[in-house]
Length: 148
Image 1 (spheres, helix red, strand yellow):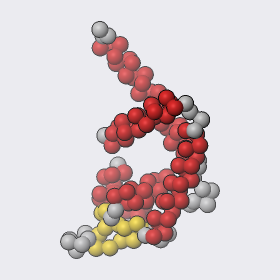
Image 2 (cartoon, rainbow, N blue to C red; image 1 turned 180 degrees about the vertical axis):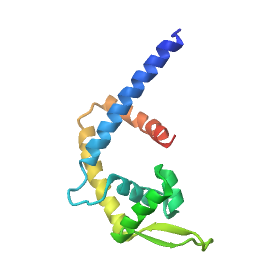
Image 3 (cartoon, rainbow, N blue to C red; image 1 turned 90 degrees about the vertical axis):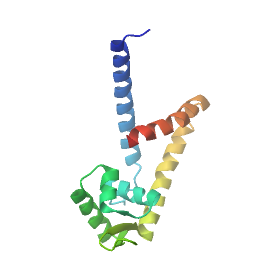
Image 4 (tube, rainbow, N blue to C red; image 1 turned 120 degrees about the vertical axis):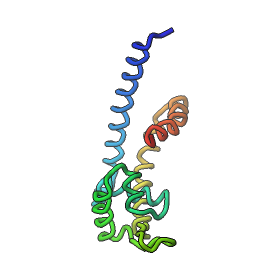
């Protein structure tokens, strides 16, 4: 039976390998952004979150993206000025404002995802069937870690 020390070292090593690999893949995917895309990764993340979850308050978006509400307000202001999102009153609480993805924002997300997905799909085709199966099994686990 492994000792606690050996398990910890093994977990630390796995953590380090995963951190490096995920960060490198993130940077590589970021480089697939269209050169004319003036939006930052943070702004694209907000558009993507709205695309997946629908209209949300600034506070909900800030919590989802792990930033402070004033930072999210600045991001939303930039996205609104560019026409990617709109604000409107909450359906049941008129004191609250929700952020809604505009049609331009939706089209931008779809095009950006298609470009990055095409690059990643091409890279996946270079892997063996067993490697793709391992990634298919790992994807939900990585998502759970990302949401922790």
